[in-house]
Image (cartoon, rainbow over all chains, first blue to last red):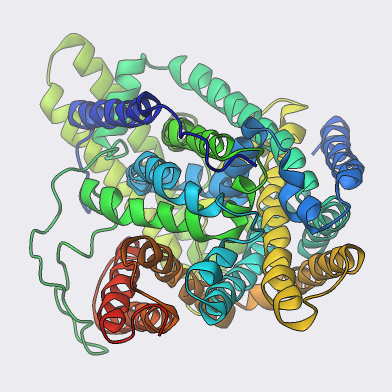
Length: 41
Length: 574
């Protein structure tokens, strides 16, 4: 086991967060573009 | 199911069991049985992590949620990528710093044996109650799909999963999970393609999205909360109607997902042995990080697709028709005469919805009378929803009947071509087994490593410890199967235990955060913190109206705050 090895490069984490941010922004756009709450009958 | 579907299904089950059993050769001692000899590649551990989280109820329940409530459930996963990065940076070095077999072993090295025992016990109690449900909930749905008796489907999942997990240990868990995850993904992809082809045969993509969106099904990201009142409201007295809405009561918005969801995912992936076990199986700490990051990258998009399948299912049923209630077994419990009256109303409302849907699309294409056609369409959707609510009201009150989990299976059985039905049923079985095997192996690890070998037989040889591991796995498998067979169906009590058990995830997380942040905290501070954390969550649950996702944050903060305060009086080493 090599627990003391250097961690993954920072850019890997930046990539994960950037991918999540892009997904969230797209979801926001998608919701704004299409969704209208229906409300009760 | 037709013969070919049965062949696909049985062949899949047979292959999974064979594949699990042949992994036994990698298990000569506890390190091999619970940590795979630290030789499992990161991509396999990563897929296993995803498969464990994708329980059968996730596959059938999440698509059902998409059908019924739209995409709002997605908010729960928004914090997941953040949680994975935090785990990689701060938790993995702790968990991979020594050759431990359970997450709670770390707590002993940092605080002491009592903290480890409490944390491990919290895990055992919460997970063993949940395990009965992991078997029971999908078994009921699978029984309806296959025509087998509920007890037979419980026994198939329980006996097969216990069998290969007892023999093959974590090697069997991980490598069967990989195949199960692939079957789950292929099954979902097949359903997605078939639904897209059928729905897009009637409307363009933009029209389909507009129709779903105008029915309120595409609420994928809600930024503005329903209430900005930051003061949580108490439960009103029984029989009294009162507005209890506050910022803390809404389950699905960006803020609950980002903060509450992050803490939930931190606790689940970082402190729940059923997940931590996978990151202890890799050759290096960086392999563990990569295994976690697979979920960090893939889980959010995967949930988008799964919920979108649910939305497409709703469109499919709106276009081609569907039953008023998706569980025939539940529908049979209502008064037939009253049910027939509501069903007649439902058919009228459903036909009207399709007519208004087409009128709205035609009006949009011709840009004439769009606004009034839209309002008529939205009103027709409300009318269908209202008849379903009437149908629900006809079901007996003693149990909270819900057909959400039956919506996807109904589509699979009635709309998919031959072979695909067998594949999808296999996928749902796979999802149930991939979650159950991980929980069995981790319950066994906590029992043997944290209790048997720590307190009862510290000098046990490799052979006898391994035997104890196999006996514990078998015992938990039998327990889970019996709970599923005889208790889970009764609902209330075991459901309550299950629910309360899951409240303490945040408390477990708090123990690890205290270890990292408060260097002066020792055993007294940690134990006080854990007790205070559990007490705080229970106190909040029984007094205030607060959404479940916040419990993890509350528990974690309480542990760290109380642990820090107590450490001022009882610092580490005293």
